[in-house]
Amino acid sequence: MSRDSPPPPIPRLATTRGRPARRAQGPVGKWWIRVHRWASIVFGLWFVVQATSGAVLLYGSDIARSLHPERYTVTSSATPMGPLESLRMVQALHPELGAVGVQTYEGVHMVRGPGDSRDHIDAFVDPGTGRINGIGRELPGFVMFLLNLHDCALACEGMPGYLPWLATPLAAPFGEGATLGTWLLGALGTSVILLTVSGAVIWWPGRRALRTGFTVRRHKGRYARDLDLHRVVGIVAVPFLLMWGVTGAAFYYQWPQRAYFALLPGQADTAPARPNPGEGPPLSLERARDGVLASNPGAQLVGVTPVSGTYWFALRDGPGEPGGSFDPYRYSTFAGNHSVAVDDRGGGTVDRLSGGGPFTERVWRDGTLYGLHFGTLVAPLPRALWLAFGLSPLVLGVTGFTVWRVKNRSARNRRRRRAATTL
Image 1 (cartoon, rainbow, N blue to C red):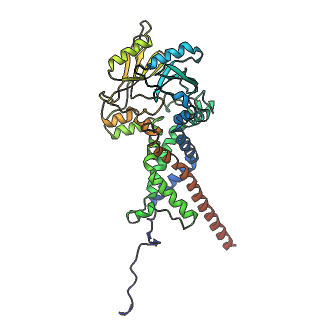
Image 2 (image 1 turned 90 degrees about the vertical axis):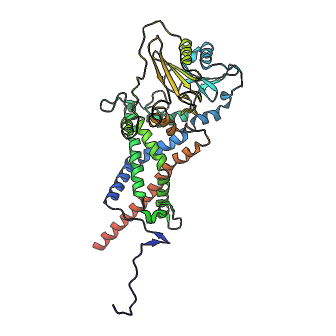
Image 3 (image 1 turned 180 degrees about the horizontal axis):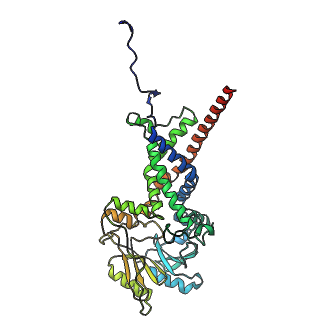
């Protein structure tokens, strides 16, 4: 090189319209790409269906209220009827309903029929007047179908869409009470964790090109647009997708709880599910209720459910109580932040009091996971945030499919060109 020749150009990071190039994927990144791809192939469509059905179920009770607003009329009264009194009234007036339990929802007493299924007939009582506003199923048929799909993988008997083979019991090591449907739902939750983590690793563009990770190229063709949209929507939705994956797996598998308490203070809930049985004379619901309320002054009774010799009482503690006024089920039809189980023959009592133990333990134990997953922590208006992110898998599914189709078509064309040149 002569003294007068110009110096060589300084190497610069490749750019596209002023955008720094994304970092190249190394061996580890390519491994995460494979994990993401195969998890999408195996579980992607099911995840889209589950997420979309869950987005509708966020407003399942609100849909029911809009279809039958007359059932939810509440009249102000200085001496409103209590939940147990509403139950007794319906049992006397409508014995054909087989009413056994009652739950307070938005001030109305929903008197419920037998069984764990929500497919029974309810009576809606206005506690202010003591009148029955209406009688019918709590949820419309299509919402019940989505509930069976989302919560049970169509394995809940008595609900629309029930498939008996999905209710097939599984032996060890799947856990007590596990069925094929619950195992599949737990597997889906685990796959969502893998999809979310792998997607975040793949998305990371490097610090110098961080802006590209939040940019959508709208004038570079459908492939570039959908690829960028897939990346942006995916990374923004990571907190919600990861929350749904962890909580969804935790509803059916034990490993999320073990991992949680291995990392954070607290211990797993080992309280017995039912109180010790007694051998004394039958204990009336009224006497059991009076004892529960006497032991919990200031608490509000919001639900009563007798099941197999046990009275389950749902309470909502006042602001001055140990559980505080926070109720993760506040906006659901299973309200109450404090449950008490009483044996119907004077046996033991199990008091599941919210508010005790370290904060990290209370988050796992006191229904916060349920409230996070189903959005019952908040009122319907802010729950729209859950709805928006609940629809994000639909966007990810559509954009992911279009990107894959373009790449697959390009790969086929390259193979054809290579084949043509070798002839």
